[in-house]
Figure (cartoon, rainbow, N blue to C red):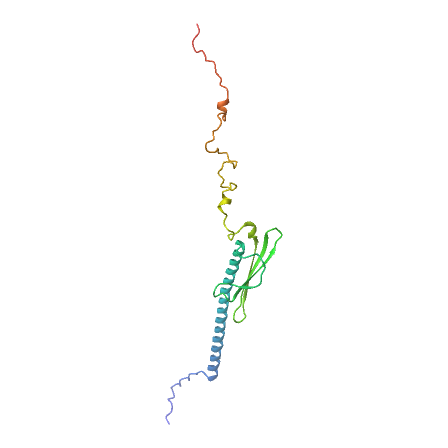
Amino acid sequence: MIGRHPGSTARPRRGGLTLLEVVIALAILLFSVAAISQLLAIGHQRAIEVQQRAIGTMLCQRKLAELTIGAESLNSSGYAAFPEEGMDQWQWKVDATQGGVGGLWNVQVTVKFEGEDNQGIEVQMGQMILDPTLRGSNQNPPPTSTSSSSGTGPTDTSGTSGSNTPAAGATTPAATTPATTAPKTTTPARSTGKGG
């Protein structure tokens, strides 16, 4: 048996990871990955919801514009689908009530989206709208030529609309300015000669 040298020192043994420490580290890693993946899924869902709300707001503004110009009637209605292709899950409705002033309506447009998982969104916008039938709309037919040539519109050039411009061929009276009607006065000539 070989003995150690009395003056030599023994190396300290390196401590390794025990099985319990490895299991705990793996459990922490798995919990962290699960939490991060859940946060990513929630963020993705919120991004889709924000995009759908932006689309719903745009559709509400479009319907309000159509009601303002008279393309849609100012009548309360239930939910109806949009006619465009690819808008099957979007629906809209109008709640219109007569205001205190005649011809003024309180209009509220509601647009909703129903997803496949029954988790939809709903966007509402309201506005006061003057009845397009009272002020006219772009849906009315254009005026005919007989109504515009009757001489009652602002384009009347017959000379009877009360303007101060004389009609063609008319003569103005000669005594319209004070200079032509004032009597002529004569002044006596001064004598500049030297008297004798």
